[in-house]
Amino acid sequence: MKANFHTHNYRCGHATGNVEDYVEEALKNNYSVIGISDHSPLPKYHFDRMGMNELEGYLIEIEEAQKKYDGKIKIYKSLEVEYFEDLEGYYKELREKLDYLLLGMHTYVVNGKLKDSWVVSSEKEMIEYARHMEKAINSGLFEIVAHPDLYVASKLRWTNAAMDAATIICRAALEKDVALEVNANGIRKMLPFDKTPKRYRYPYQEFWEVVKSHGNKVVVSSDCHAPEDMDDESMELARKFARDLDLNVIETIF
Image (cartoon, rainbow, N blue to C red):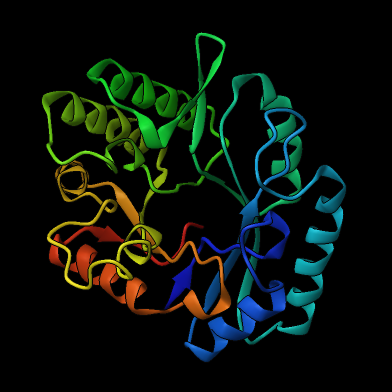
């Protein structure tokens, strides 16, 4: 069985292709399961993604693909979304329309202000990131955490705080039976500049060694923003990364 739970499409504004383009690419590469999980619209905290008025069309397009490809491939309805505590009611409404929710914590709130996960810098901020992710996981809304290691993507040195943050995340995910994602897009972003990098920005090896020690469930996903990236070199390298660390990779979350 071959699965990919993290894909996008043109609606987010920084991807190409429609739902059927991704399904066709998945079939071409012998996938049994694909999750369509574009960036969710939000009623506040607006980012580069589909508008609220596009959500219904997005869901209808997935449902049409489910009917057309029934018996050929399993297609799941999903969205990738940040966790903002004041939007829990909205997330619960979304969850009723979907097969699963994917936590993509690109941004979070600290002391009433938005914080970018890409620029977590101090040791205090690492723990804040982990505690926010812990709260999101404990909400019970999510089946998968996308790229949980974003907080160290710009770090060359693994610190005690980075270890403590990883431990907080792993323990929460283990307790709630939530899968952590090895994300191929972190590799994809590096390859044009370095074909043989000594380390990836993400997946970040030391983080995943902590995951290994806790025995967390792991999915390997493409996070593709173009159909041709569904099963590209980056995805193969992500799978190899997971194999080399002997991570507990699963191909189903249900």
